[in-house]
Length: 330
Ligand SMILES: Nc1ncnc2c1ncn2[C@@H]1O[C@H](COP(=O)(O)OP(=O)(O)OP(=O)(O)O)[C@@H](O)[C@H]1O
Ligand SMILES: [Mg+2]
Image (spheres, rainbow, N blue to C red):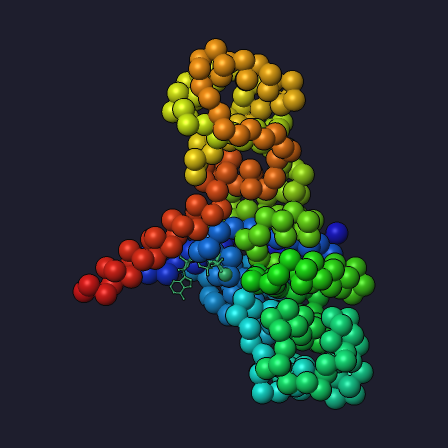
């Protein structure tokens, strides 16, 4: 499959902060590619560079074969973008929003007339085409934005957090539309998310990004396999004593304590859990809960970063507060 996006050592610095720090990867035609990471990881900054809205500090990329630095017009014409922040005109109807966008992209009037109803149907908004956008729910606005992004038939569609803040049912619906347009229109889709489940269920391949760097990349199954075996999570009031006791067990590949929960990566959990229980008993270590599960992308993130995505986001928020305090004190 030909590559539609090819990124080489791409970086963006803001006042010394490396928001994107030398990332390289490619996306093939027809993929649904997910960019997964916590708040502030550099997802939007990457998409902004790929869609030519931000200039890279160093490195580069091509999109549909066009260089993002020297061939910006062609890059823009060949992509669709749906931003994290809604960008619809609330005072226009669904149809008018689409029509205006088509006009901006030089889509001929006749083509707009034919395609707008078609796309509104794809996202099940055909019966609302004459309604003002200000009367739409969050999910309906999102669907309209996706339909709008497709009007000029882009080969690649960038979706920045397509389901942020939507309820699970609407999220499922949007996943269906994304799959459908990927299949029917052969649109390559590159999306960002900080929802593990979204990356897991929707994307063919996932790049996990943290602090502007790609820490793991592959299919969801490949990523889970890299951490090896199964996962046991347990809670114990004697957590501090537990680690030294189990550390030397041959079936244990890693152990991490975070958020009051101990996560163990182990081989053959179903069998080895018995030895684990015996060990705990011998050492008079009590536990309050124990779960065995197959690895999730959350476990993958924890394995590589030592933190859960939620903890990482709390760190980022704290860093932002510190920066804000320093700034306002001056
Ligand atoms: N225009 C800007 N000026 C200065 N710093 C910026 C700017 N845009 C982004 N940043 C910083 O770059 C880092 C990456 O931000 P970015 O918006 O790419 O993260 P993100 O992964 O999209 O996060 P989120 O999940 O919250 O959308 C953050 O630390 C952010 O504060
Ligand atoms: Mg973002």
